[in-house]
Image 1 (cartoon, rainbow, N blue to C red):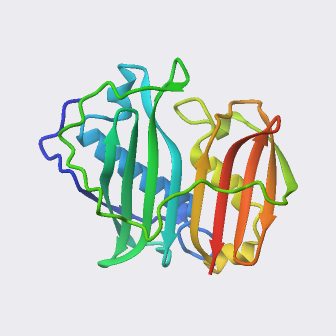
Image 2 (cartoon, rainbow, N blue to C red):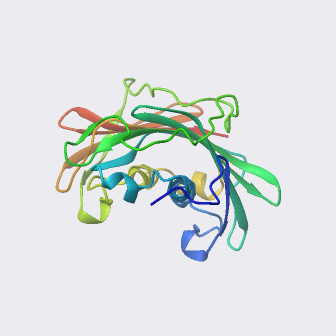
Length: 246
């Protein structure tokens, strides 16, 4: 698709929180929070001419490599949230994108995301085949207090769950959807911590693809104010999640 006539380098999009996106406490699920952020990023790529449809002409897609989310509070059922997004950096095969969620003018969530251009046939990263110079970059305009990092998951840990990848875990790029990893891990957390909104930030590293019928192990390491999960296949780590608690 061509670049939209209403394209801007900073996009704002409103979303209404519906009941299917909420936990039993009536507040937005952390997984659906990530979905809303990513849908906003996708909307910006569509008006900017670098969407999934545009990129598939060259067998390419954006895939998430790292994501950090900082949360002051979560929106609740019926809230209208405004998500703003812009690009910090974009070069060759990778991009850093910022996102913020606001309710009634108050910022409640900030996120920094790291994306890679992925060839969906060759199953490897490569340079973006589409023009992107029309995007103004904002390297100094940050959405989070801390940037994303490499999660240290080599401390003492225990196996807490075994999982087989099913068709419902896969996305349009034919690998495990990034939000599914988060869902698997959060299902292993004490539900009181989730329902009482004790997560102040979380960070995800996506390291290796997982596909249908893959058998994986989920490991957990707990300290005073953080929990780290890692997901491995045949002793190789595919994913790491760090939860920081209030």
